[in-house]
Length: 386
Length: 134
Image (cartoon, rainbow over the protein chains, first blue to last red):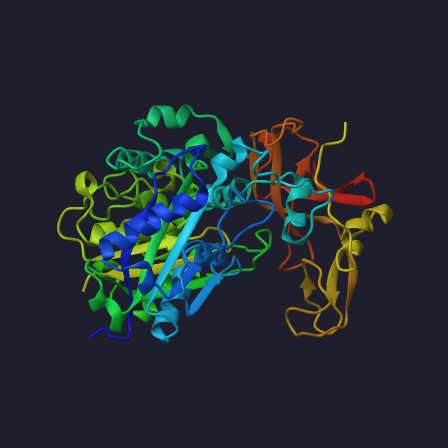
């Protein structure tokens, strides 16, 4: 029935930590082995590799392992591979893999995202960041004004929401509190301590209106998703999850000229590619590198109207594990660590297979949305066990 | 007491923008065929693809479209808090400048504030910062 579709089959994840000693290539291997193990595939059956954003020389903690390096290190023979940052955010690597298997370029593609930012910052002698005399390209439009972090860029969108629609800190807090509550049910999550509203409200401000708990934390981890061709899913021993629709976009890539966030056009576009509607979705795993991005995704995907995201999550009951739309059930990046996009698709698969354990969404979930990207970049995946 | 800043590398595309302050001018690239403003500056018009583009001196006033107050010291020399804002320039539709609002307490800045450009020179670069009018 879905022979020409792409599926996520095996999934894997390394430990998630900060300042890990384990080599990032070995973290990647851990995730690959887990994904192969549960899918029943062998490394010889993998004929494609896709990653985001590829190896980043000069900022190795951000992406230490390139696709060609992984292929060589694991002795793979591939018929297709890709890795790069010029794509519609992290899960764009999954979109590329899905396109590859649907066009016969490969049958089983390892998609991975390895991050090593905490370790690299702790060991600058091993992971030096070259000193630059001057900035260029897009960074010249922010860095001279000391708008150095993505939090400064995201905070301006959040502030516009505060001013235009009355978004409150108590509403923003629900993303962080929900993530933290769910993280405590996820043995792998980076943060295992509870977070209260009082702690949130008294936290120091980083870039208004975003405080410490609105920002994810650098972590060291690898996440793997195997994307398989419909004609090849019978080679897999785990339950395949169908990529029912996918969408991605870029606003004006320079964050200073993108008037609003790409999750709005991408969220709307997703529903033009499927018969499913937002009402069919059982759980959402929405990018929350900063809390506000998850609120924007709820609006962009049409779960509520633009401007109503704050009210939609008021009190947190609706997005809680036992609510009508459980959100970021693994903890999100705010709770589980900065896995950088791939954690959302990984968790969607966990939930659709009923493998969530203590954090399993009740009621046999069959349809999920996973997203990545904030600001001018956005990718959305609609995943279904159908 | 100049603020520690990363400075842009000047090139053929951006030189007019980053050095206009030497003459007290805020210069935004503009298409001479369809009048679209082009920022970041490039050698073609993003609206009509004309190559007939050149820098135009604009008013240098505008409105705070959105902003954030940064409290985090991203490096030891950074003085906080400070305001990062997007300014919508008067008479320059479609262009937003990310900049700092200076000359007033950070907590006083708000969306809708009227602002005007002032230039801060560091080396060969003239950074367009903005201060509130009134």
